[in-house]
Amino acid sequence: MDKNFIKIINSKKFSKNNIKTDSRNVSSGDVFIAIKGTAHDGHDHVREVIKKGASCVICEHSLSGLDEKDLKKIIVTEDTREALACLAKSFYNDPSGSLLTVGVTGTNGKTTTVFLLDSILNMAGKKCGMISTVYLKTNGDKLERSSMTTPDIITTNRLLEEMVQNGKKAAVIEMSSHALDQKRVWGIELDAAIFTNITPEHLDYHKNMERYLKDKSKIFKNLKKCGKAVLNIDDVMVAGLAREKDFPGLVTFGVEQDADIKAENIELSRTGTKFDICTRKTGKKFGMNTTLVGLHNVYHILGVTACLIDGFVAQAKI
Image (cartoon, rainbow, N blue to C red):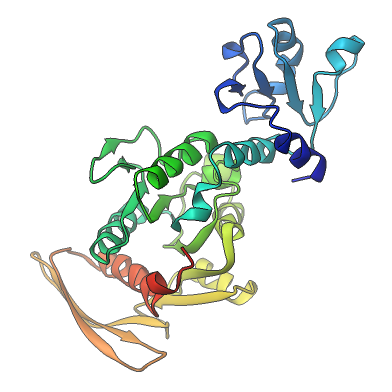
C-alpha cells in the first residue's frame, strides 16, 4: 500500500461504520471505495455517490468534469481493493497479527482440514476460532452458519477481531481462489498456509488451470516472515510450487512421493482408516487409527500433521 494512503488512515479520517463499496447503500457522510469487479465497476458510480453526499471517494483514477469542491473529496490510490483491506485491518486493530492464524486453500478438502485443525488446536489448549464454508466460530464453541466460503475483507477482519475479544488464541480460515484473487483476504497474516490439491474447477472464472493455480498460490503472499508453507507433493501442480518458490518454511506431505510427512501401510475400510505417519526429518513413525474413511481423508490428516509438527503451536509468537 502506498505511503500517502497509510498517512490518511493514520489521520483517523474514517470510521468502520461508514465505509461503503456498494453505491446503492451510500448515505450522506459515507466514504465510498470504488471497486472494479467482474461485472460492475464502482468507478462508474462516483458522480452518483458524490450527489448522495459522500464525504470521500477512494478510487484508482480521478474523473473529469467535477468541480473543485467535489475534486477535494477524491483520493486516488493504486489499488482500491488493497486500500479497503488496509482500512479494515486498521479499524479492527490488525487481529490476524494477534492470533496464531492458519489459512487453507485447495480445490477439495479445505473444510475438513479447517475442522481438523480447529479441533486439534483446541485440544492443545490454543482456543481456536474458524471461518469456513459451513460454519463460523468466534465465541466459545458456538457455531454460526456461513453464507460463503470466504467473506469480504471487512467481515473477515471483524470476525477475527471478535475472536480476539472473546479470548481466542488461534484462527483457521478457509480461503477460496476467488477470495485470494479478489483480495478479500489481503493483509490477513498467516503463520501457516496449507495447499491441499488442485483439480479443474471454477474455470469459468479463472479461464485455465495455470491461472487457477496462480490465484490459489497467492495464499503464500499472506505468510508472516517465518510462516510455514504446507504443500501436497503428490499433486503435480502443487508440487511445482515447491520447486519454483523460495518459502521461508516448507513442509510437504503425501502418500506416493518422498514427502516430509508421508503415509504408509494404509488400510482402508468402510468403518475407518489405519495408516502410519512417517516423518522424514526424524525417521520416526507413529500409527494413526481414525473413523474418517477414504484415501482423501488420509491426505487431510497428513496436511494437518505437516502444519502442526515440530512444535508449531509452541513456537508461534502469539
